[in-house]
Amino acid sequence: MQVEKEKVVNAIRQVAGPQRAEQADRLLPDPIDIDQYAGMLREFGVDPEDLVAQATTRVPGPLKGLLARFMPRGR
Image (cartoon, rainbow, N blue to C red):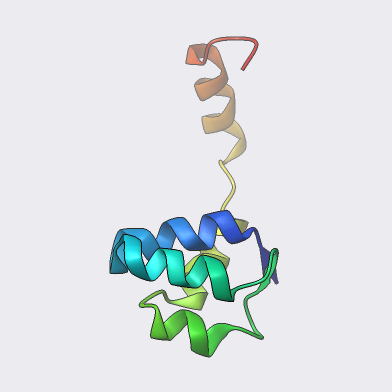
């Protein structure tokens, strides 16, 4: 599965700090193939399975409708 580099770099920034995030930003391609770069992601402190789970999580239908009622239109 491929994930946008920005999402991965932000995850690395949260767990490893800005310097490691900058290093990852220089080393990783965009988009990032999670399977291919799993080892490197682990070295940066990010669990590849967590990234996949975040990328594939969807808001359930009834909740999505409820959220839409409270979200400003035009965004």
